Length: 169
Image (cartoon, rainbow, N blue to C red; front, side, top):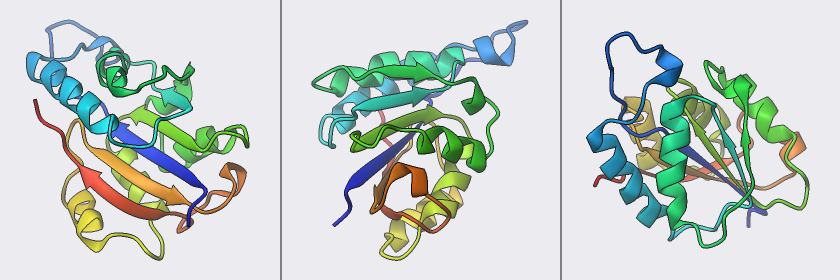
């Protein structure tokens, strides 16, 4: 039985306003609806005790709406390293999680989210969920991974993908 849970949430659908820098792109109307649907989905999962979020506006807005599904608001750390991150960058952010934290949620971007899931998913992973992630990791996609060891020891193949869902509003 895994001691820890890692939840990876890709930001909801963003808008592309003319002249706005990528980092400042807001959520589109559909994105706001989907992020609210993600709140309902997150309400059924173990509550995160810590959230790592990219500083991009669309990720912050996604967490603001999706986080409403969490009973107790966890601390949120806005990590510059998550914007434009590689899967190793994301892993390095998660590895510094305090040992007492059992559930971590990361709000980030593609292709980081799908690559991270594919790299971490080891023995015991859901084959249908892995196929879905390999095909596409849509906006608002939520991957749930079981982590048997310490956060500091998390490595490629060191988790089991339990589920992958795409809440829609």
